[in-house]
Image 1 (cartoon, rainbow, N blue to C red):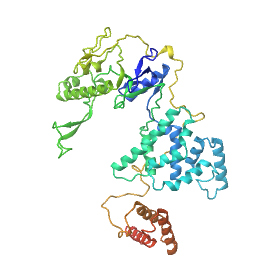
Image 2 (tube, rainbow, N blue to C red; image 1 turned 135 degrees about the vertical axis):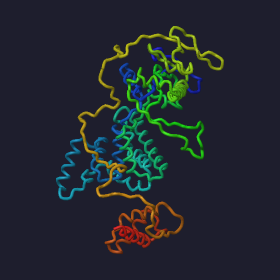
Image 3 (cartoon, rainbow, N blue to C red; image 1 turned 180 degrees about the vertical axis):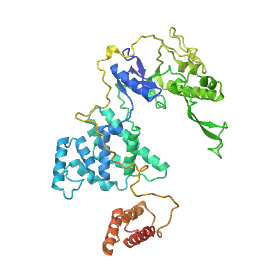
Length: 496
């Protein structure tokens, strides 16, 4: 299609131009098929725009995350070293030399976050830190990207479209994290966002941006293509067999319409184990199962889902729609067009007669038979795996113990929490005017910073400083904060 240079319309459909690779979208049934398709396109000499996992392994995401870690904990020397290395401020040898020199000079009481000298970007982050006190994770990330101009640093790494897409994907994850916290009525914080990103990476769910450009063919699943439109759409995987979802876990409803007064009622979970796995065909179990209503229902559900999914693919095309096929035929298309019967071919490879009509008019088709090898031998100069992000030279994989604590599954030694009803530990804090979130933050930070062993005047000075930082001096007095702290200490001592 690219060599023939067909004409396509613009969105207003008042002008035409020659097709480009970026105008083409190939739709696949699964993510694994998308990866295989992208590799095949690269072997054929074409670029592929595809979303894949491993966002947090890319240099631009590592740099942004390291900046967030340094803002959260300035003593994080590993984050500081990553920032200096990824921005090109220092090479690896200089970082190691400076760090070892500092630790040797401060062997008695080393400050683990110090020793970097006048590193400009680290000083920038320290200057930004006071501005992040009342910002959300997404706002902090946007602040870092803008103030430190990390997009420019990412572009210098090469493949700019992919790098910028990855930074945008990281911003989207920050918004997703805050939306999830809002739905669960839990507090969102920068530390929680970093832990959430770490869990995404552990579960291989940290998807990269697709890196779409005018010279790259788009490869994506049918589900992901919903709501999009392409001048030329190729519906791949048409030869797939029907996949009835009868094994495993299924939701079984006892009524056709849900009861809005009992939304979870009249339904139950059914779990069936396939004892034969892939060897089920031509067994007595299969023969018996094919006669059951459960199998018939699973087939009807699968056919309906196939029809909906194929409809999504067909309606993505704006100018051209391509049905690629092999000797196996187009079973998926046949089942949808013939209401479940895949033995009736929808398209005749030896004819241009169309089975499709719109508004009473036939839709013109063009059938072509081409014999192509599966491995593209004429365009196979390199058999090595396709690298969408080149591995940094000199880097070797190292196995490290996890440095982050999974707060959902791990607890510090000696802590056995118990859940109960909330209790009141003191009187309500009296304040002037309307309540503001800064008042609660002032109370929280003072409870953390207060030490009852200090002199009374010093504790009052600390309380007054917290009120000044939060800007609520006119609403709350230092004596009130002190009384709140004393009541909280008494409450804690009652549990001993």
